[in-house]
Each structure stands twice: as structure tokens, then as C-alpha cells.
Length: 288
Image (cartoon, helix red, strand yellow):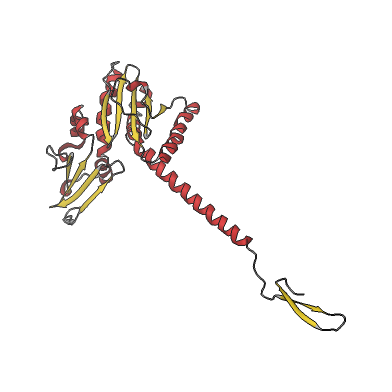
């Protein structure tokens, strides 16, 4: 389908919500996708490369392009029949990186082992902590908020996760810790501050069983971006409502103004003794 398609003009550079950078270029019937992922080095150090090689095969290059973490090269002359599934897999490269990373801890828990507390950077000044215990896997996100309003909205947002567990007792436990790290990070160099917040997700084996593992990875690796995206949407909605209310208030004020009549009435006084009249004042009451 895509044979003999000219891709020489393809040159797209964009950045994801978490600062993951992508560069897509075309040349000689091949498309090169360069990915810059902040935590890629740490993920590879934890044994993710064999998983990624098994998933992407020869399109994942051994030597990535300069200044990028990984490089994928797709040959348009040798594409599989299911193009949509193939494109989705390539677009989900970042997701597969996290899946390879989580697999190590899911396996350790299934074997009843306790892993070390592992920290990987997910954004400038923000990190993700993960540890496998004999009965669960704990994931902790450390995120920073430049705006105090974002911090307040995030608290409301994450409290909803806490409240929903009262209705769905099989849902993962979510804990929110503003300013100070949770007790699980006491032995680490976790940062503190007024602009810092931690949220903990406790996963039990049922959450990453064979049937639920893919969904668990999809949701957890994007949770930080999901939260910040909804914070931005909430702020935009609040501003829209404020502007709408301001317009309504202005309309009320405009309706409350007293308008001057077009036909002012002239008051005339008549002297009863002489019959002379005199103009005394002008009234802006409506005349009959």
C-alpha cells in the first residue's frame, strides 16, 4: 500500500506532555523515528532491552541517533498486513519501555521476593519509585507544581481516587502525600517542599494478572501526564466559567442603569394675581 510513496519531505519534530521528544524523518522508502526518553538509560539498566528487542525486532537499532535514546527504522517495502496494529505498536514505544521495566518487579513479586527501591527520572525534577514486596508492588510518583493552584486541584483530583476505593474495594489503593514523602521513602533522598507532592499506587497480584497486566501498564505509566492534563483542563474550565459569569454580571449592571427620557417635561408656574407665566425648571419625567 505504501510502496513507492515519496517520504523524502517527511520531517516532524514534536514533544510529548512529559517532555519526551520525537523526531520522524523519511528517506529512501524508510521512516526513521528517533525517541528521547529521560528514563530510557535507567530502564535499559534494569534489563528492559531484551524485552524491547523481542517486541520490535530489527526495527529497533543497536546504535541510536545522536542526542536520542532510541531509534526505530521502518522499511515501507516490508510492512505487515495489519498496518493499524503495526503503527499503534510503534507509537506505543514509550509505553513498551515502561512495560519492560515493570515486568521485572511483577515477576519478583510473583516469586515472593522483595526488590530494592528503584528510582527512575520521568521528568526534570520528578521521579518514579517502585518496589516489589512479597504480597504487592508499590509505585510512587514524585511530581512538582509550579503553580499553587495546580497543587490544590491535584489534591482534589487524587482524593477522588481515594474515595472511589470505598465503592470499588478491588481497585488499587491510592495515597496522597503533599510536601513530605511517604514512609516507604524514608531511607531515600526523596525531595521535600511546598511545591512537591507524592502519590502512591499499591498494586496487588490481581491488578497485574495475565488478563490485566497490559491495562495496568497503560494506566500507570501515563498517570502523571493524565493528572497534569486534567489539571490544565480544570483550570481552563474554571476560567471559562468565570468569564461567563462576568459577562452575566455586566449585563445585570447595564440593565440597572436609569435611562434619560427622550421627551423632557417643562414645569411652568402661573401667577394667579397677574396671570403671568414663568419657566422655572425642566423635569425629565415622562409627560402625559
